[in-house]
Image 1 (cartoon, each protein chain N blue to C red):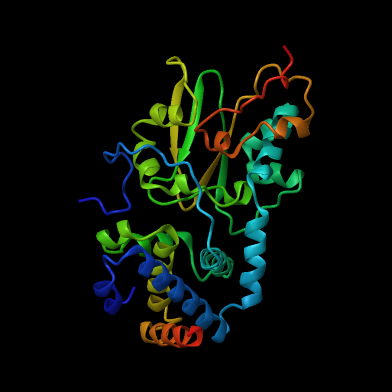
Image 2: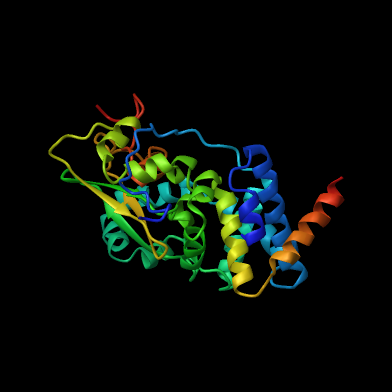
Length: 213
Length: 100
């Protein structure tokens, strides 16, 4: 912000605030287009691309890893090249991605305490709660309390590792495959994998009647 | 004193609000514009972070997510010489007039 705007708009009403920044965002885009820095078409196409990404992409990756142990090993060792195998080629500008596996002993949960870094290439835009001050503050000091709010009560014997994302490194949690799902197809498995369990705030939920008894 | 963005471990007893707001058109465009500039190498995430982290602490806490992005992008575009604040002010006025 320029000096002239900082002073005037530190504590505005939220309604005015929104239109003020919405307008400034529009003005910035319009000027960058006028100057030939980027085009409206590029922004339109990017918007469609961003919209097309969703947690179902991540869920397919997880289901494939559950079904194919060799793929899982490659995914954990070198996510970028393993993803290429199944048709997800990450652009060069995508930050480094690490895939971390939840086990009986260790449960991972991902946060970005400083902002909102997130594996957008596989999960789409982060949910609002991921960007909330409450989550960013609490995740690193009370991960079990946070998980409880998402419906997950971890046994005390399970070690919790909270991973703080950065501008250059993002994390995808590979959740534990639920028991009783041995006979499910990859497509059926993918349906069990929610966005939140790939962030690690909860575990996959198996609806009644889906798992073999 | 930690800067305002450095909130990991800060005392906070608010429950996590798990509802998601419907993104407004300008927010989706702002998001996409960031990615486009990123692909062109004009805007790097670490630069954006630094710009955002340099916002006045009260402003940082009062702005919504994409408002913070917009404030930071303006700072960065001015700093890099792509735009001037006066130019943006004038364009805002022009857009406001066009809307009326």
